[in-house]
Length: 286
Image (tube, rainbow, N blue to C red; front, side, top):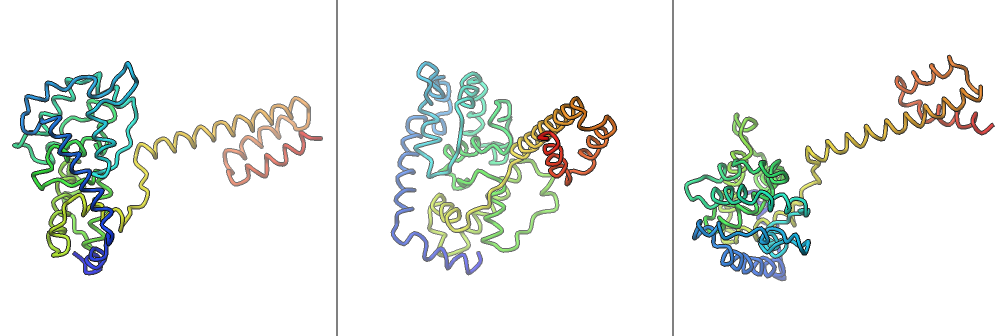
């Protein structure tokens, strides 16, 4: 670990407020595990009811995810939507099969992340929800961390270790393999410092988030939505432009040839669009 990171760790949370928040969340984790003892008794997974996921009559989140999203928020923040809960409820048997993998002591961290979470829409992609569930049911192994974004793990490792050397095959690794690799590196970095070695892992990760807050990262899904929004806006702008041209043509303010030229300039010279629109609007006002 870099000396500058150790120095920041020495002065972190002087009033103990963050530690008290984490300690309280860990108490709630113990309550969660007592209520849902899936790790200790995998057969108890069968007792998970649809209302534990989402109560359709009341339109409320069930106890299972109330713990995951709210009570255990200091152990890793998630933002979920009711449609995700509804899908999990409607695919409860599939979700139970995933939980059996989560608590399987023979499975590696990478295997638990790579199991088919994407069979339930909203649990795939970077699998943040899945990773938090895995963390909660494997906490005592000491091999999991409450950081659920692959990009965040990469960011933190770069900050605390300086240069992070990835194996040649890193880009070809599965999501789970990457997550296991990065988790192991982060745990090793924590243990390498006499300052952070005794820290509980959630407390250490809170230190990272508070001290080295990751930049806002736009996900692939978000990028797709932004592209779609931009395309829609361009279509609307072009439609408005053509409506203006057609109106001017009907009023004989421009010729058919001028209409064709303006239309081509719109497509070929985006930088001129505002000037052209302003000019045409002035013609419309006459």
